[in-house]
Image 1 (cartoon, one colour):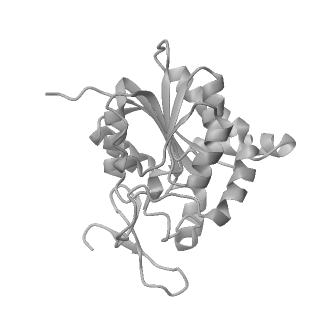
Image 2 (tube, rainbow, N blue to C red):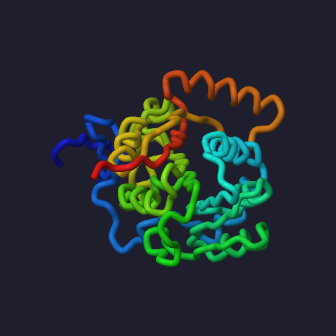
Image 3 (cartoon, helix red, strand yellow):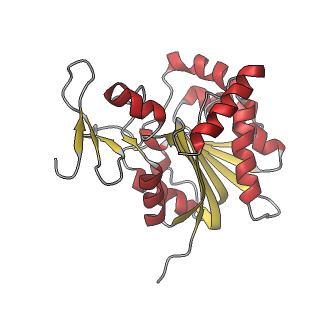
Length: 265
């Protein structure tokens, strides 16, 4: 394959992941067929573990919502869309702060759980790219945490997100960091190389370039680490580790907050 270097591994399976020598991002080749473009969803057996995990991560969601609110150009009734809402923890927190909230969620179990957690929430139980019920420029902010690595076409996802944002609207994306310390040490054994679910793994450069190409400008790019479930002393230890790794963008995940820009012409 031209322009990419193969990664070997997976217990003798054929080479499936390739690293771009220019931007160092990682892509699954070939991409699967017959899958939803927003391929991330929770199978029924994983829902309970997700619920338990998210119930311990209020500080994690609070931090991400704070980033959006600090950058938000205030409107009288701010609107937020979450792509893949999980059990609805972030949406519930946003609603408590006065945001009008909606979500695109493929899992019927998680969609129903979020409806019960967030009274009045609108859940579009559909693939994000196929959801025609959302009119253009409907939102001040869109949040997509651990979603873009699961989609077959990240470019189409970002283009769709831009079309749904008002001018100057915000997009917050989190995704595994293909140049994290763990990725560098693990190489082909890095635990984020999961061919069944992870199709595109980005670097800060590759994600930033794609956002620029699709009409965004990054206003914050950093790496984050830890699960967000840490408590007490473990939390302070995790924060110290995160700060140290973020200096050289070696944290486990990329966190990018961007704003839409007007395109020439």
